[in-house]
Structures are given as C-alpha cells and as structure tokens.
Image (cartoon, rainbow, N blue to C red; front, side):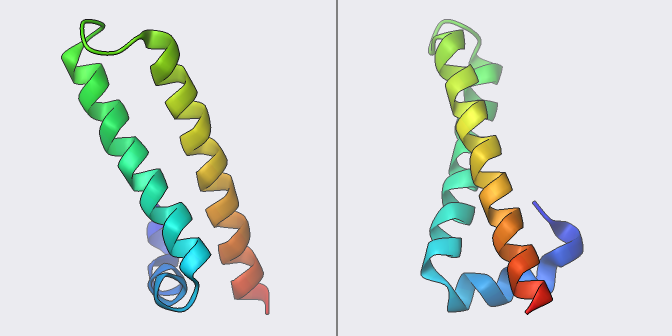
Length: 73
C-alpha cells in the first residue's frame, strides 16, 4: 500500500503509533479478505467480506490523509 510514499510510510510507522495501528490493521484485513475469498463462501459470509472491504477502504483513506498531512508539513 502506498508504494510511492514508501519512505514517508516507514517514517510514520516509527514515529506515529496511530498510523502504525491503522496501517497494520489495513494489512491484516487485506490478508483476511484474500484468504476468505480463496476459501469461498464455505468459511465466511459474503456480507462479512464486504464489511471487511469497507473497513479496509476506510483505513486506507485514513492512512492516506495522514501521509498527505505529514508530507505537507
């Protein structure tokens, strides 16, 4: 996520605990969604997958806003 801002992401992950939490949660959700989609509907309800995707997108937006704020300050 945010490969073009790799240096800023690394800096924020070490200096901002909230950013690290958001970033890590986003990555955890990404992994959970990927596993759930590979397993099919037998293991997780499609509605739950959609909820996870929405939360992941919200976290990505939050992380991006923090990156832009840090970049512009």
